Image (cartoon, rainbow, N blue to C red; front, side):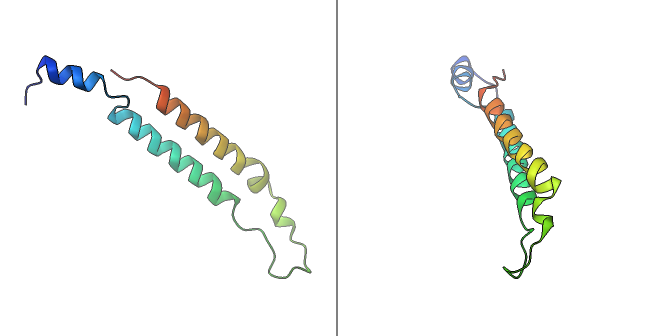
Length: 82
């Protein structure tokens, strides 16, 4: 289907393009991955201490992934593709 000037004008008025939605999906996956990495680490008994709760993955890596994913989401929304 050949695009008429009217169709081209309507497409340029769309706030987000297909590429923006793809980037949003990638950012969402990064955020979800960060939350998945934060899961676990507790002990089965409240009387036991499990030092695994304070691992590098849960304390440093996962929060960085979540914040980075949200920053990537902002970039994906603000980026203009032609």
